[in-house]
Length: 459
Image 1 (cartoon, rainbow, N blue to C red):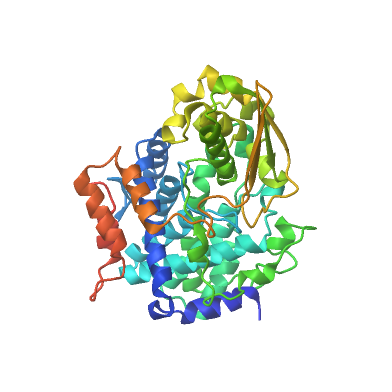
Image 2 (image 1 turned 135 degrees about the horizontal axis):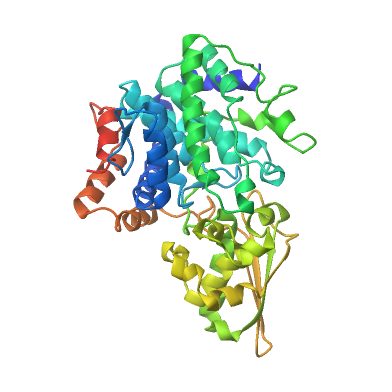
């Protein structure tokens, strides 16, 4: 049996009652995090640019998170993906190295609203989308990044096809076809790292609309290659040729082991690969009362694969050209955390990016390979600070905070949500969205997905 059919068999038979209650509750909190971030992103220029571009294709009736915009289902999914992922503060499945909610949620919302489905349909589709996207990322064994592919875009497309297929009630053969079709749409390059451009922000939304499109074609009777994962010209043979991969993980324990519960919520608005370093520096700063003038040199050890993302090209990492560059700069993250004693969205504003104290400190950062890194199972960080008076201070964060082994609690997620909402929404809006998300699928009579989407739009 092909991997796509193994997936389809499980997805086609999985019902709301098959998902453990703790998984559903964690899923609600992951959705809450994503919706809060969409609201926060709505105040940034890239949100307006994306809305303008998508609006040029014509109006629609599907609500957009944190926005007054209404778009056709597929375009709404694109914009929702841009908003959830745009600040790079959204959740990540650590082992998969994939932002799973940023595509699965937009796909599930648009598919559910378009089909006049229920919130249970929506949340179940979202969970199944997360489960499949995570497994596709896991099967890549951390190698997608090494070859310049963004697994959020690739794995997210497959997860989105499953999410949309589940919501719209595709039969097993149709779910197989949807995965086969979306394999020809899954795309996402990491070239944005060279110049700080905005393409990464688009990847999850594009994956979501690709999944919706593939599910619609499959429902209409379009065929797709069944061996889309493991075939001679399937995903792994074409994208990761010569690398160690584990395609069998795409379907392994699907419906039995729940990767949704393993998904990490971010404590910092930066690339997940840099989180352990921020925590390490902040701990050393507090323990030793360090200030910028005390630092002679900083050494950071990182696995070479994430190192390509947050340490290269060196010139852009020492002096980020914009806030998106800064999110993917290990030297900037380390120097900012040390200089300011925190790393929040404020540390990505223009005045922070031009801070001469931070930029001078970034030049003192040396990056070396980390033979003890847990990547891709966890995103490790080792920091050594040499002080001007000769002290050598070190700290290792082997497992990054937010990881399933060190999770942010549901209460932490609610606190983060409130922080995301505070700059852009009043208290009444915040409470309305909080109630809508945390009640997803709980009502005895259930509510429509459209009612939920309207509750999560801007008033």
